[in-house]
Amino acid sequence: MHILAAFDKFKDSMSAFAACQAAAAGIRTVLGDRITITEAPLTDGGEGFCSILTHSVGGHIEQHLVTGPLGEDIHAPLGWVDARTLSATTNQMLPFSGKRLAVIEMASVAGLEQVPNEQRHPRNCTTTGVGELIRIATASKADAILLGIGGSATSDLGLGALESLGIKCIANNGQAIAHSTPEQWPFIEGFEGQLDIEVPPIYIACDVDNPLLGDRGAAAVYGPQKGLQTEEIEAFDQLSKTLATKLCAHCERPMTLLNIPGSGAAGGLGFGLKVACRAEFVPGFELVQSWLDLKTKVLEADLVLTGEGKFDQSSLAGKGPYALLQLADQYDKPSIVFAGAVDAVAVDRVSELFARSAVYTITPENCPLPDALANGARNLDVKISEVIHSALLHDG
Image (cartoon, rainbow, N blue to C red; front, side, top):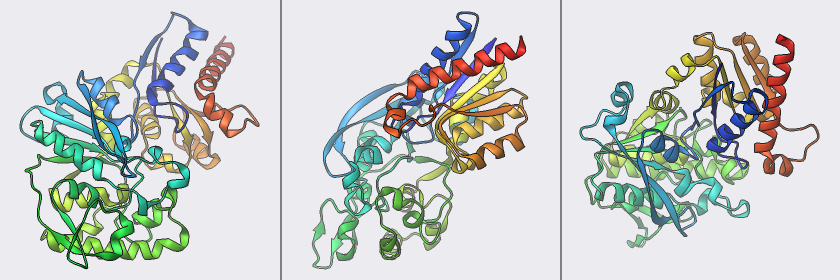
């Protein structure tokens, strides 16, 4: 029997790598060495994006000292991949000349996980470090850059990143604002200068289709999870519109860029990079699926196991585990989702759509959240053992 264990991260509990390892341990507890297990950590563009993609094709990772979301010095990874190791489909999605591809993960340099709860607020956070990594990759002769933008703490339109690349924010007193964050936005009169380096093509892995502004925009949809209060959303959105309009005018780019799908992702980072650097969006999970060759892994498996920290209605919008259920169903493979928490509506939807799929929560009944997070790997191991053992008894 061949089992595919392809898990995303369990946020605040375990990485995708750790989840796959815990799943494999649970499988072997029941089946021992009678089983073939393929571990395939998943990523949605957030935590783990750089390490999962880079290591899966034999690339290497450097650590660089850059600016964190609160202006502090942090070490962040920069992955290097030889494009010749990628599949033909992946190369079609990243159509650049040359072979040196740099992989950058926003979550490791401007991510919510790096900001203490009491300091989380978009006005305080910057994407400066993302721009610094782009500069480092460019100086190291990258032929192209792949950027994952999940898990962001920021909502600065990418202005921090653009400052790192040469575009200055000018205050109403005529002076350049160093290290600006949205807290300084009311005082920004406009912009000065252009990119001071020739950046290679930038591809942004993104499955979010939100525009920059409005009810489905960056502030309204993603601002609250970053610390933006309900009563602050309208004013923040208006300031975002003002600065975005000025940035488009400065870079001589059309205002329609505010409305393209994905411009509201990561607090507008994709928008800013598209305006100033001509960055392009690529479908996130479609890229990951191709990169990791998940189709072949599913075809080779007799059973597909997947999961994430919380499986809810947002999971049905194309996140990795749900996309894997779709792939398993396409090839008539049984699949099981294991999650720290599950939403009944999402479970019902899976039951309606996929006859050979099931969803389980790994968290023991009445378990406090801190305990569930601390013992995620153990809970996943135990639950998978229970489910497989029960299945064997039923079959027997």
